Figure 1: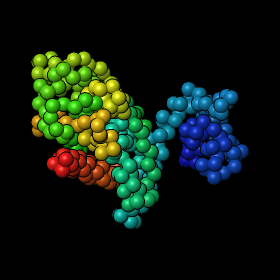
Figure 2: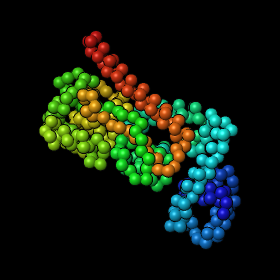
Figure 3: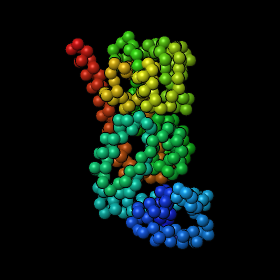
Figure 4: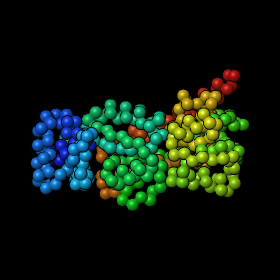
Length: 316
């Protein structure tokens, strides 16, 4: 068994095709198939079965893939470390990271643009998911790290806060106050509110406001989709809660309004998680630094939007 055979096997597994794996490897398909066959003979098991859509892993293939993932990850890390010793300014390898939906709306695009320009030898694999899904992917080794708004009690994972972000109310109906102005919880009384489900980190803050009677909504709906909250608020006249990184100028207008809350009343703490005992890739550290910068820029942009709304109102 050698590293080439393991790599070929993993590419067939990931692409579900010997042909696509051979194209990625830059070899003819028979040559790749022979190497995988030799690997199966050495292990004494079949790793794949053929079907009408290509090939599928056997139970042995699935288990072998999970065992091989850390091998290739460690090899890539070793290669990267050696190259860094030769040229400390260059990082190489593959970075697999996961983020919640709002990040893909306004943050990830510019972050990826800056990161790839500054680190052209890095390969990125990005995945979107809910908090528990992302942490499970990190625990399973499918992701190198993830960012999410979750608690810090996660066995087997290292958790650190990278950013605290303000949460605002978006509403399809105009409240008796100016857009971007501060509203107290009592202003939400009588609204149809979109709430996150109990598994979301923001849910306890909102449920406490309702249970203590500070907020008396006309009705509630539970939605675990950022775009779902935005579109329901816009088209159905409901009100929901989103982080400011998910608010852009093009989504606001006569059919959607935004309101802020008193300081520290409604916020999300974004945390970085990666597997405990494993060193974070230098490329990940650079990526997270750029991400923090982008989030700070988003806050400045959001505040500038409020100033522009105020200036436009003054001119009218």
